[in-house]
Length: 284
View 1 (cartoon, rainbow, N blue to C red):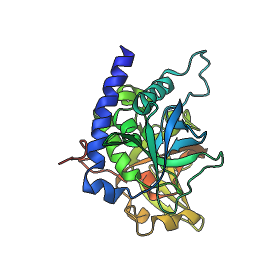
View 2 (cartoon, rainbow, N blue to C red; view 1 turned 90 degrees about the horizontal axis):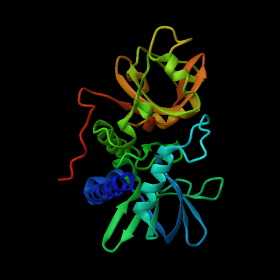
View 3 (cartoon, helix red, strand yellow; view 1 turned 120 degrees about the horizontal axis):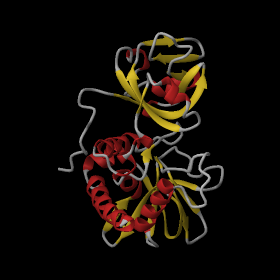
View 4 (tube, rainbow, N blue to C red; view 1 turned 135 degrees about the vertical axis):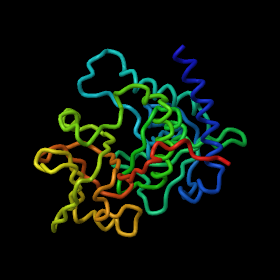
């Protein structure tokens, strides 16, 4: 039954991926350069492939479930195992095309490719990252050095989340509220999505702080280092204008007085409106 559900999700996600990437707006929002093609030899986990030439590829822009530190089971953690099976069902041993954004590093410190990946199957070109998010087996993630396609993948994630698909069916990966300080602290060291109203914006020489309550020593904060503020200039996120707005921030929970997410680039922050529970993007 589980295998049947995964195969059904793969077929649906593959169709959505193909339709979305074929629209002109998709190209405008996600500009990448085709660079490399090879056959898949092995699916290592829900976001890592080994190719038939021995090289490994990390799917940039997505984060599949990883076993938490407390998991002591002899078998793989079920969410991680499901993600790996879904990726394997999609790519099989097909030829994949690696695409890179201009100016972004193509390999990580482990010498793995960091790429947007497309399955080439006849005349089909299936965007793997979009598929994994569309079917609920991964969340959207970005880093200051790898931001290509981030907004587009977040939009796809929003529709998947609102529909309660895949990992969004349970509360394990739910979006957390900024006021839930204790719950946030319990998730230190983990990647989370957090929503709340920015109560105030403070700027010092070394940091800009987005405060979500009056007691900044204990409550949730988003912190932007001075060296990272330049990335926000000219972007869709103006830090100084966020007071009073509801935002969603994604990143790794740390403790700095209270819980904090350090934002290094604008794609970590989304400004929410009354229409935030967006439906899947139009494919017309």
